[in-house]
Length: 287
Ligand code: PLP
Image (cartoon, rainbow, N blue to C red; front, side, top):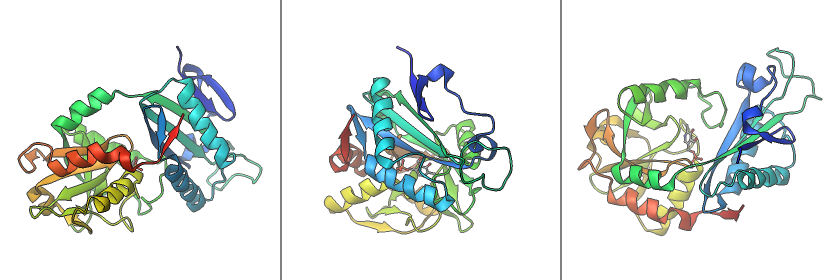
């Protein structure tokens, strides 16, 4: 079975899927995106992801390429046509195709939309979660509007590549005050020595992760002690446990930071419990 992508109104073979060379996404990274998890034939938290897409589009003054319900339909359809039971569905919207010029294109230029989906291995993800991942710190290199989920990810690419070249799976950004902001493509959490769960407030320095929001709901439901506040690299080094969250990783324990073990070097009980409970707190829409 060949993979299918949706490109500006058409379902095409993934191998043939293409956008115009003057698409503003290609020329200027002038676009936004969302990634939803697909879990057991259901799209996870689609309404929350589309709310954030709406916000990102508004912040950049890009129109919806079609109605929100049409986007929902296409997300389901691309997932279904690719027979993705467990995996990810991706939507990208750019400011459209127009002669290369920094100014916004004429009003009649329609935004572009691309939707793709791919399967992932739940088994491989579980094996990774049982081991935990290593993170490598990196100085903050992004613009201040990290609250917008833009496709301009070059700083994140550099941070994550540096992590990879230093034996890590994820980068942890450090701001000028020596605080951890977030990961290259995840939000960052620690559990302090005293058992307090800490994550940075979403007001500045991070993307307001959907997975983060679900985990915060769970944390409250479970009655865990938590604080939304910045935490420093020193605190992270001393933490009992650490983990990251994203639609693509769910709750993923962090067991090494810059090559040194965190806690006892094994996934922590809080992260493991939150991972187990995760889908009980999500909105699930059948494909
Ligand atoms: N932070 C950054 C920089 C991200 O790119 C992502 C996801 O791609 C996240 C956090 C986690 O967001 P979500 O939980 O909505 O996937």
